[in-house]
Image 1 (cartoon, rainbow, N blue to C red):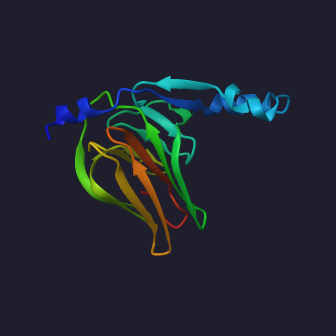
Image 2: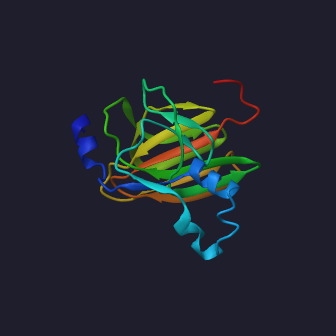
Length: 183
């Protein structure tokens, strides 16, 4: 598949993210304490993104993610979660992100490994190389015409399954565990 085709296949729909820093300010200001719980979701400060930010901090894991060769201040964002696994305080987060607007290195993969998690896809997906500080981040694109089944295993103990929708981009993140030295 030609590199140009990959980017053309990416869904053009925007993805909304919670602006976590602003949410935290609202918590400290007591906004949620004074408001009916049913309204909290509507009050969350959000922004719609048409393309993935070049640099951001994933609020789910605290990892700073950046596209290659980009280093600048990062905004704390919480994109829509697809799956959150937990096993002995190790969390693997999978969330949906908007399309990429720059071209950079990628490869076709059928499996990934992030610390103690083995991740297998029932079809090839495209993995884009991103930079992560504080853990690992994998940017995955389902370029197939159908859903891709993902089977996630923690060592050989626990298993989770999730479907990746066609032509959508997903970020997998995991904070660096204490037992791992600097990467």
